Image (cartoon, rainbow, N blue to C red; front, top):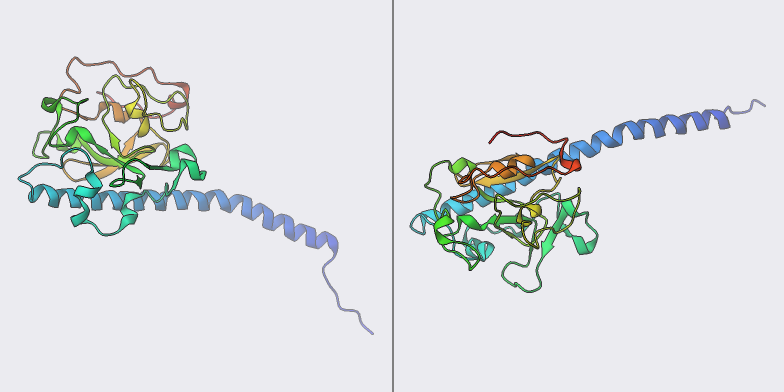
Length: 245
């Protein structure tokens, strides 16, 4: 009687090793594709925010919203709550998300409780006690609107008011660094999209922004007055592209 031929142990181990090798090659490529897809989806979300703001401005005499519940002000212009989240950052830091990929959550503000985008409060039509009204943009109908950030990636509570003297994070992944003096920019200086973040602008365009580029955007009306020096970049940021002022 002829015996059926099967795999030997050596042959089985060789097949397993080949599968493991292929997985090791393919998994990083699949992860990169996933990251790219999330970055594109993030830009699509921000385009929706830009469109919502363009409609808000048209119906409010050409002015942006007032301090400070921007998501509440824009509710008539969007329906999907998923727009509050970058697809790469849907869980909070407390839920175990890495800092750059963490959404923010506020237990003290029922009108803006969660999200992973921030609003540049220098664009608002009025200010808080910490901001001078004459330094605020108030309307999109200004020069260089394509360089004025509106809504974009952030790892902390959804309002940001950067100043030229703001310092970058001391190390990659420094969580929720918006607290304290000279630290507002840290909330958006995060490695969320392969060394970039996504932002919409006051001309209602959307694009990726390099981390060092954040310091040469026109966050408020007096950003370049006095020509402040760029920060002394920490070691983890020195690999990123430099941008001329």
